[in-house]
Length: 204
Image (cartoon, rainbow, N blue to C red; front, top):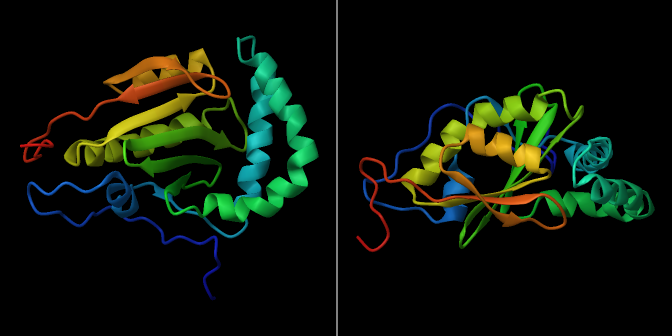
């Protein structure tokens, strides 16, 4: 069977070692990262992700939090723009700076975008928000990604849709801090890279 545009190779559990003292750029580190227990995009995932975003908005609209009004607005606004969004989705998910990680069950995803400043972890998306799908994926992938980020001195940013999620993210990732509001909703989080054995810090 021929590969489809939405396909990405399945990720294994070994990563090619870089020469000691060599730091990859955030984009290089993200592209080469091997994260056990995850896989990449498959056929039809661009449409699936667009729909999951709407599911997530309406899940947020049911929560008694400060982001409830914004989640309701985004859920309502999704429908008028749905045709354009579904057409544009393949282009959005295949941006060179973004990489999607899916759970092995293919019921949750997390997108990470690389910039010159570091990695930005986007909102978690899942088929059934509130059932722990995103949390299980986060627990699976973050240890490997944090190790790679520290080895290459990459700063990690994240947007949490609600203050409650921000607290959970911070509790699950040592070094992550709340640095202010995120747009269009939620909290902005940041984790500075930690030194590891054999890692050369910038300027050294």
